[in-house]
Amino acid sequence: MKTEPVSLELAERDESTGRVEAFSDGIFGVAITLLALEIGVEEYQGATDASLLAHIAELWPKYLAYINSFATVLLMWLAHHQMFKFIKKPNSSLILTNGLLLLIVALVPFPTKTVGQFIDTEARNVAVEFYTGYFLLVNFAFLLVWRIAAAKSKGLLHAFATHEVVATVSKSYQIGVLINLICFGLSFVNPWLGIGANVISWIYWAVSFKE
Image (cartoon, rainbow, N blue to C red):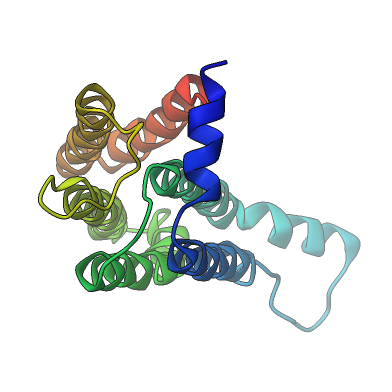
């Protein structure tokens, strides 16, 4: 069976690869958890059933930001998991670049809170531009990590990561950068176009994702 060599390669991968991936999983988990902490109704005087229901409904921008960011970070984690299936051993450059990616991912709750707080105000333009621009930065970081991992001179990938496989994965990351660049550009035309394109992009990646 074709899967046997792949399974053998995975079993033989460097222990440090698993440690890097485990640490990365923890950061992704923390980032997703922190997203939920931004949602809540502040305590106020004279609360009634009707007023509380109204306050909950008024939080719709935060719900939108949370769902969009949760889905995006989840897909990032899946992409990261897929990437490390090809990596046999990391070097210091890969570990540091992956650390840069995680630094950016860990701060995703910041643009999420910003867009959730200001998308329904006169400051929505800057909020959405910041939000879509931030995810563009994340995609650039992903591409950089893969470029370092896939460098032929480094020998960091498994043997089953052929030239064709590397080219296909590289193309997918380049498409991700392009899609997020479009989302970022549309946010300058109309903030709702930027958010809408961002939502459509993660729906596309979720539907097209293959193990």
